[in-house]
Image (tube, rainbow, N blue to C red):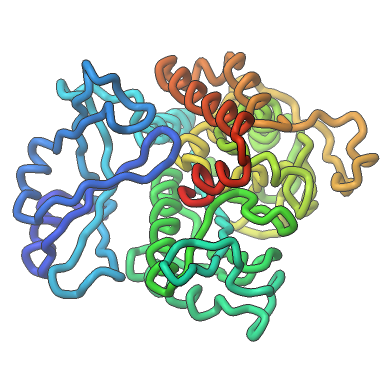
Length: 436
């Protein structure tokens, strides 16, 4: 049952809530928030809260800067790492113009609009994201270093794995906030970890990705560590991905269960995803560092699909029942989860609407380059990805022109700054490592 504004007001009164964080993200996925005193919440629910959109990257121009935040009561949670006395609540927000019209840069709204298109066709979907991250030591001043917290590897245990206690603490916090942790383990890289939560509806999962990232950042900080979601923070270690898992459902049946016929809805969906994979890359992999991850350590480079094979862009993991799904392996955690999940769904839906045939699976290890002969590649750089996306009729149909222009302009500036930096490593630390 969904929460109402009155439910939230009653909870605030009964549970010593003093501060309410109203959270959202810009079009690039950077999380933002404003904190209001709980006594202001009735007014916020009725009138929203105005903020300066020109100060948020990719939002508004100075001459037309006002935007309104509207909290979604159903996203209410208490931040468990904040004091128990004078508790802190958080809600995610949608954004409108002052006249109540939708704001084009409201990426939550875009994702919900894609979900609505699925429902209009009698389809529903569930989405889960596997978000990898690194934990680094900090120096005597609390500043992040590039020294990983341990030298463990995939599925290692203590003493090689020094992250088990912090993962435990994160899982408990996730549970307190309404997420359902499933798995946590040490990943392949030194200091690299993964914590997965149960799949949900697309919008809820995108919200949960942001909740997971902010929770990991907060709890790492309280333990004297720095959590990084940079796609490739260490040149000689595995990159961090954000694999997106998706199940497609019609009349209660999971369409990815069993064999996938080339002319089935599931086949068309996968075909749409493959057809638009290059166009999606600027959004799935939005920073120059993203492209250092591709082609090694189980990060894909070529556009193909298969069952179980982890060298593929799209794979169908071994599963049964409700857990049958596809997995898109290219996205990384620097992305905006609302835009990326929305565009992935839209690409698959385009395949269904156009009845694109599913190509044959590629059952080869594509990390051996000779095995990839004849296959199309994902873009090799952010510049190439921008060019592909900017020329895409599919992207132009999906996203407002103003959002596209601001997104690609910002990314192009990143490319120029990265390419012309006197000290590229220092630039990457300042503009990627410390931010993501």
